[in-house]
Length: 383
Image (tube, rainbow, N blue to C red; front, side):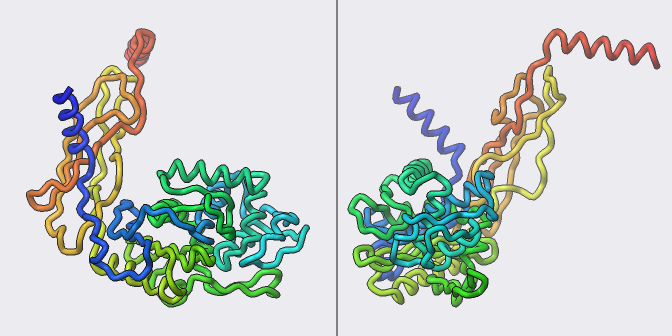
């Protein structure tokens, strides 16, 4: 049994990219808020965390999950940006941050999503939840299901707004980073989270973003603010420069100004100290010949993350070594390993990336062989 466990551990070490970044200790960066995380989007690497897994009230940062489910519904075709939403009496009764929807008022999904992203409109969040799932309660069940899928182990939602300080409604800085990462992978949402000022109702009602970083921080892409007397000042902030995007989460800030300052500190640290290195060489992979298969060859593809995060200046001599099978015998399964890409920094192995089959190839049957033989004979006689 020990030998088997050792072999499995060795296999994991050989096939999993080596993380080039260790999480910093809490005192490495001065952050005033009691809960904080700095995560890189592409790799999911956690650069800094402070009480990151402690459960706490998230206030309106809850709406990151609300926007994620709405965005996924749009991209799945369940609803469209032009779908008209009719405000219910329930949605209009929410209070807190809102655009004062009237019962029966009609707006498009695009308009309501904009109001949620820019001014944290609780009434629009509930109206969208009712559109997507039929009721806020059903939508919240989906929120919790999605949280589970994302690995958010310290999260439980009881509403889609974060407006109510229910003891059963909680999450953590790390979990917020996870759902924020999932949301900003959808470029669509940034059409809304990067709006500084806008209007609705034909220009009669003005909107101004609650996230002050959108106006004053280079590369800011979002994402969501929040405040209640219990949660205090919360923020999930995202920013991108030169192809690298970071997520800074700050919870239970003492003041609004301090939460933005903490987020700037975290984002500045990320941009100043780290860079992405590609786990892919520039050259395309050649097809691998298949023996006795219904297809003559199969296209290999890389598996896993595309990048590795490292300290700036640490990766000065990157090179790639590809080990690929000369051929493979059918049947070939989709995802079957065909080789390995070894990523080196000088003589140090940074990562080993599996190269796998992009599709399945079935084995030739007797009928296939007979058909090919007969076809070649006919072709020979005709020639």
